[in-house]
Length: 429
Image (cartoon, rainbow, N blue to C red; front, side, top):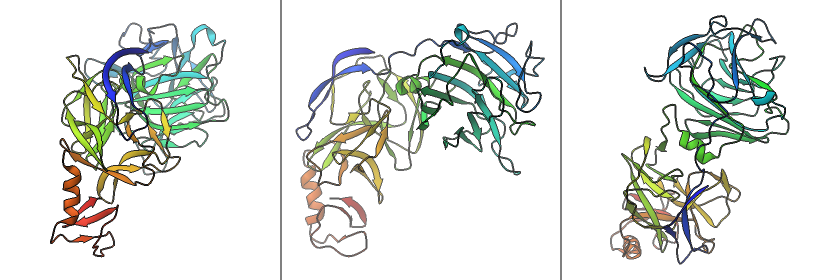
């Protein structure tokens, strides 16, 4: 873990936690993979950068796998990857890859990370289910479906442990699977899409494992293109996985239909072209948003922009000091109580609303922590210095001729805390 000091202050009169935060590279650097394959050396297609080995294979019948001497013998072809400068391999439905762990896998792997850059031609067929197997932990491929697979555009976990994310046909995606001693998670293009806890060793790896096959014959899936595979004998942190980004190594952040999101950069200070970033400061029952041009590493901000995905770019210039009252999530998830407020859209109004007891928020997000605000349901957001925001907010409700209605359409004379329709617009009081 790397640390820089003295650049960010998180403080507030209403917040129990007042402290100076050291800028911390929460995920550290991305460690060197135990095995990495890019399939770009035609003379040695399965050459490994690391200490592992990969062998081409075929599925000759149900519940079986047969290792082959060459890519050609396994019907595996070289093709174009995500760009013309990148190579990839094309595996038909009856082909697979065997991966041997370092030292023959004397110690079963319950902690590891597997990354695959993949492209599938079809997502769903009219005849019913459609699969692309990704990981088969059973070495002999005997009497077991794949443990990780794509089905109808989602990544699924074997053992009926659910689906997550979105895989688009004829689009390159970076899929990462990690096992942290039965705590398993799936990421697509740097974003966590599914996580769960298992009660057995289904995802424990022995001396070897198989990629892109399961026990069915004829196969239920179609061909798949693969441009890169990496394997670590450790579970990467969510921050490290987010830094790996998509197949081009680019991290992206998503703005939803509300036009707002929270975000925390972990690897470096960053800029995001196409959106505006804001720190947050509490003033009464309003969060004042103040724009920052560069987002400091480890600082939670509010992003505003049109719905869509935006590229995150590292920034190496001078960073001015920033203050905020938004807290960053620094672990995979937080369990909330009534002292936590998260950015949400409720009845068309965007603000920081009280979190439900026991709810969670994923890593890389921001929130408010206000222990003394258990009776408050939410905090509106406003832009600017906020010097007279309380007066402005009160005047909206007190001005003569203003018509105020509740959400049922009934006119209100004396508005208490809540959401109202004021002159045709929804307002949080």
